[in-house]
Image (tube, rainbow, N blue to C red; front, side, top):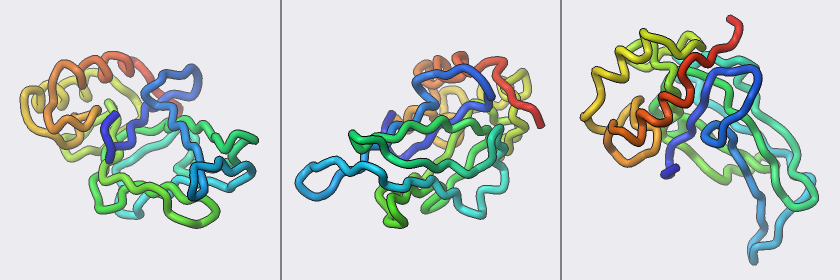
Length: 159
């Protein structure tokens, strides 16, 4: 997936490679760092996002400096720093877009269910430029994005 996009799927169980966020924290020189507190912070203006587990993605890196998080959310947000990854309170990556196949509103609001309303909005954007329906960051809404959309079809989480 092309930077700077963070992709989520609303679901409480199961996993898919495209919503797993793998983070490896390294020091200068490439040395991996264990037991580093990592958090993903979402911009407060991202009010169209819905989440299955809360917008509080945190954890500690393992002995190899790795932490895996599942981004279980819906909706879309574009901001200078829609999501920021912090390692021990130090920003290490920033994303301009947080996206999901759950695009119930053409403006990017989600309801944490990927269904016909989302398909309608995706279909209306198909063949166009980037935005909330460009899941892979190639500046187009095309078959590659439809593959991601289809992989999320029917996923939901409790309100």
